[in-house]
Length: 147
Image 1 (cartoon, rainbow, N blue to C red):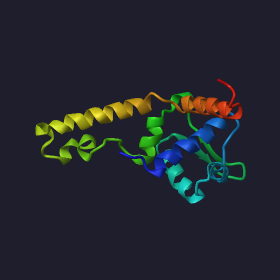
Image 2 (image 1 turned 180 degrees about the horizontal axis):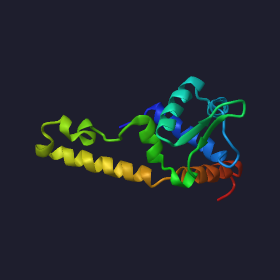
Image 3 (image 1 turned 30 degrees about the vertical axis):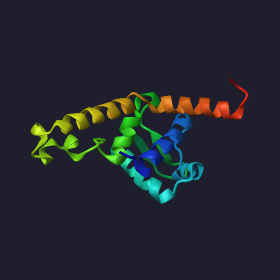
C-alpha cells in the first residue's frame, strides 16, 4: 500500500501550518513556494482538509489557512484520511458488504488487522509530534558534529 502525493503533500503543508499556528493564516502561495508543491494541487488538498474541518480558510489580502485545533490535537491519521480516504489495504475492509466472501475468507481478518495497525500508528502521531521531530532533524543537520 502506498500513499499518493496527496497524502504526503498534505502532511508537509500541515507542518507549515504548525509553524505558523500562533502567527495567523498562511497563504497557499507561501506554502506552495516553501514546499515546492503546485499551488493548484494544494488548493485541491486544502479543499479536502477544510471539508474535514482540520483547517480554516480566511479570504482577503491577509488571508490564508490555519489549523482549526492545536497541532497536538490533530493526528497524522486524520490528515491522511481526509485527503486519501479510508486506509484499508483492500476494499472489503472499508466496506465488508462489498464482498460476499467476508465471513468465509481467512485473509479478511489479516487485512482488517493490518488496517487497524496502520490507522493506530498514524493516529498516535500528532502534527506537533511531527513538527518536533522536524525541528530536531533540522537542528542536527545544522550541527553535524552533534552526537
